[in-house]
Length: 276
Picture 1 (cartoon, rainbow, N blue to C red):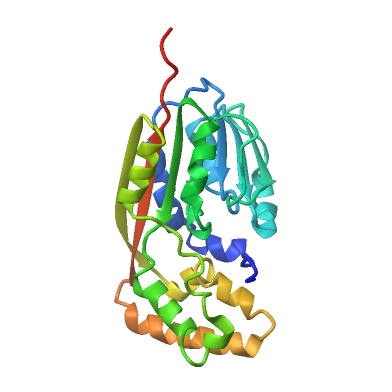
Picture 2: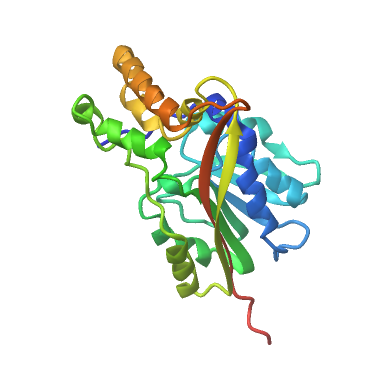
């Protein structure tokens, strides 16, 4: 069994502005929550907690819990724990999204760029919606760029003769997204009252030397880096080969390196309680 990747919060946060923008766009599509001035919110796969704090900006009195399976990410997120400026609270707890079943009802269950790591995550939707309050919201965004050169080249390199025995499967292991239409169908069949699904390709301009490689070191490359942690020389060789491929696929321009990135969004609202 392949080990779960080891995460590096600081590396992940190196491109925090670009990584945060989709979450902000997701939040703009979420309407009022049923919890009044103090809604209960769960953030699945909260990572280092930087986007979880944006929930407190949007709903100042909210009681927010961020869940993540990475000890490294939770340790970084703990910096934000405690009372919030608007009178709410923010805390973080360990949980694996593949197994997490809420023990209480939430007005909002949200996830930002996390569910792509969870095989069969759509099968978890019924349990999560069951614990979403009437008129509450389940919302998420996932990367949809796994056929882009950044990810396709990684998968091909892992499957090359030089690396197949050691790394076969690592480049594709965590590609578990559905199409936008499939998400729409799943959520509609589960009885959601309003379902809004869309996709956006962000044409990002990255700065610095080998910025696409630097981006993937925080996400897609993590399984490979983890698998080769005991072989520094091999890891250096692999990363160098991957870097050269990325340089050809994403050449630097006079103003930076253009890195298109597709993302899929979904916002689903549960039915209101029947009128008496």
